[in-house]
Image 1 (cartoon, rainbow, N blue to C red):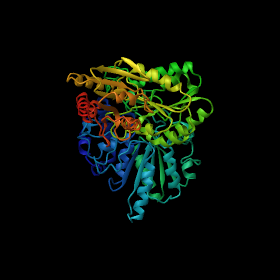
Image 2 (image 1 turned 135 degrees about the horizontal axis):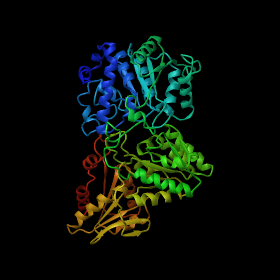
Image 3 (image 1 turned 90 degrees about the horizontal axis):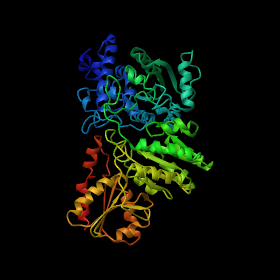
Image 4 (image 1 turned 180 degrees about the vertical axis):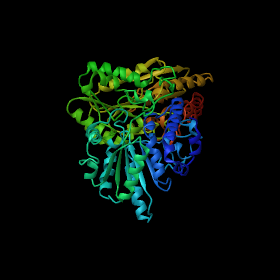
Amino acid sequence: MGANLMERVSSPEALRALPVDALPTLAEQLRQVLIQQVCRSGGHLGPNLGMVEITIALHRVFDSPWDTLLFDTGHQAYVHKLLTGRYDGFASLRTRGGLSGYPDRRESVHDHIGNSHASTALSYAEGIAKGYRITGVDQRWVVAVVGDGSLTGGMAWEALNNLGASPDLPVVIVLNDNGRSYAPTVGGLGVHLQNLRNSDQHPPQADLFTRLGLSYLGPVDGHDTVAVEDALIRACRSGRTTVVHCVTRKGNGYRPAMEHEADQMHAIGPIDPATGKSSVPGETTWTKVFGEELCELGAERPDLVCLSAAMLLPAGLGPFAQRYPDRVFDVGIAEQHALTSAAGLAMAGLHPLVAVYSTFLNRAFDQLLMDVALHDLPVTVILDRAGITGPDGPSHHGMWDLPLLCLVPGLRAAAPRDPHQLRQLLREAVGHHSGPTALRFPKASAGDPVPALEQVGQMDILYRSGPTDVLLVAIGTCAPVCIEAAGIVARQGVGVTVVDPRWFSPVPQMLPDLAAAHRGVVTVEEGVETGGAGAAITHALSAAQVRVPVRMVGLPDTFIEHGAREELLAAAGLTAEHIAECALETL
């Protein structure tokens, strides 16, 4: 087959110059590039295999970047990258300094937004289109590709509500309906889209988009480029905000993905492209340990129920859902609803556990603060992918959860340092009945046990050598690197203690006393320094009138690029050598 067409299609203009009969060959070549590269680097394979023909059609009908193309969520934009001059650099996908796994404004003029969080594109589209109207820009289309479950998010419906009130905006909404996010689309929307797909009438007479004041075209075979092109052209001619409903298959064209029942290979690590099997050894992850212990707790606690925001399998709830299907609720991409629904479950006498990625807590902070904590409700929040997540980049790094958690009155927050402590802290969290609790852990191997030498109150002493010169306060998985740093400091004749507070918020009552017995304190956390655990500890020491120098080591208060987790942690200074330097500087 070769890569001749891919080499020729270096821009949307070149794509539009291709004859129609060459498009099926181009689509097949695009799929082969996706399979070979994503199987090597890891990334979002299934969604992009389903987007090939739609993306070809988009760039043939619309004139990017004059016309604005928005992808929601952004993980389905790989084909867009390949068709907008980034084919030669595609081998660098998700590596440090290489192409992002999401649209990136710094990467190309064809990327208007740098998004990965779902359900945002319709709001962007409505605002951009109104802005064009106000500034007198004519004949400039705004196209929002909404798919992979992103229409289940509440923000998408806020935007649809406003678009319905302005039906003459030059907006085309391409609904990429593959029936799934990670798993099958949940709720009434999923049922409605299924009814539209199965309708004998074209177009169906009872679609909700028309009732909202929008125009509707479809359903269209999303793997027929000519049919999609025709629908897009008709949408433009209508002069109204129009939904083009394209039906696609996630993982289309790659048998291992299409046969992967769990999630059609939504997001993968490196795999063998011939078989679809993992090409790296299996490991015990934090998520797996959490899922195992949660099942044990489920057997002991019939009041324990779990909620997921379209992340049932990635957030570790799969085993619990298999054993207790009536006690798991997948609410779709709706973190705000998840937290307040959990509040309602708690009010009904249950103990809800909400498992989300750390970065998505940002979307539900108000609900955690005002709907859960204000009412002292026993809701446990599990924050997977806390800290540096690696190749997923700035939108997915779980960097801001520590400051958010430390702000919430009455919330107890912990960060386990090893698998044994994760099991222990999870039990303590769901056993707490007088307010909310939270646990955070990274996207990484769970690692080896880090035993405690002794306990001081609820805190664990992990290392002690020589006089009480420097106290290293290790938050969660920073414990091993702090112990390594302590060894460096001790070899220079300086006394050092390493303590794990276990529950870092509120700050343990005995931590100021322990700090007062030392000449300097260094806090180490895998989160932004501003307002995080270190800041809370510094405030607690000040309130207790403990006057020792405090140095905070954490992630910089900036957006951190994508790359290997170890590379990014080292670049941020979360290394034994840097922590040791900071310890010595406090003396």
